[in-house]
Image (cartoon, rainbow, N blue to C red; front, side, top):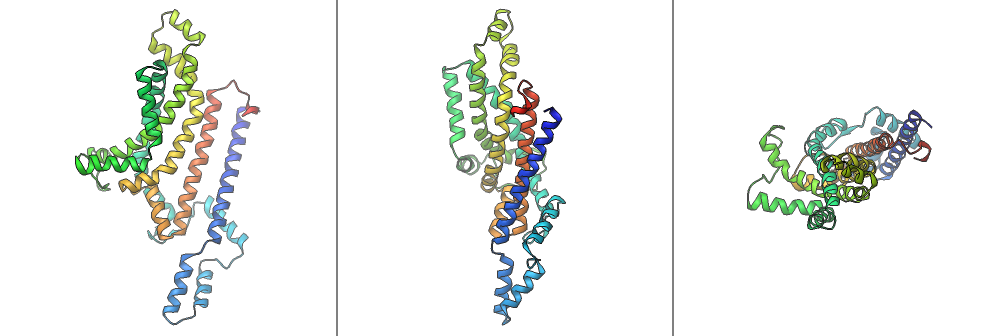
Length: 324
């Protein structure tokens, strides 16, 4: 199997996985109570009308009287043509609501991801280079602290200390400040710090364990014997082989934190991003918006795993494609 065939197979697998998740989402929503129908029946009863007729009229209006397979095909067509329906809570198309939320989520997700990718491997390799010293223990303790403490709890503590007591950062996120401004950097400082602390621990631990294997390898001894500077030796002979297994871990770790923690972080700091949008949609029982957010998270996870497989293929050409 060549590279093109491998990538094609992974793309087909990603399409299949997304189709399975989309189908499960459709079935769950199909058999869940529809709040609009309940409201129509209640409204008809209060006005002295026939609730049964109101229910049938509402089902016909929303196309719920159609057979399940017909609604499923219409649903699939809408998913893959990005016609994800209308958000009643926000009175706008679902895709437009998601686009506006991504704008705010990206403002803290991009710097958080960049800082994690830059700092995590460096601390891990530095910890491995000073293994079992106080520097190693301090870095390991920091990693376990960031990994174990819940992000929302850590965010609340920081918000109370630096927002309420010291008044160094604003308590409530403001959408009126320019994106590239000092005010925006101040209000995003704590969310980015909390997420970096939570994600850097896993990256640091993996890079430490992987790089420790190469510390006393023969090629490192040869490089030191030839007088290669420690910085150059670690960059070329430790960092590069460490990044191969690390690349398979980083994407999964970042996706898990992005999908799980973004909702809690946005609730704590009041950021109107994807997590806050999904939470509000669930509370308001906005079915189309919940479905749209689920689809978006699904596509992000599927595409992220696809990129992870391709990057691993490019970084490690020694392994046969048939074994992956």
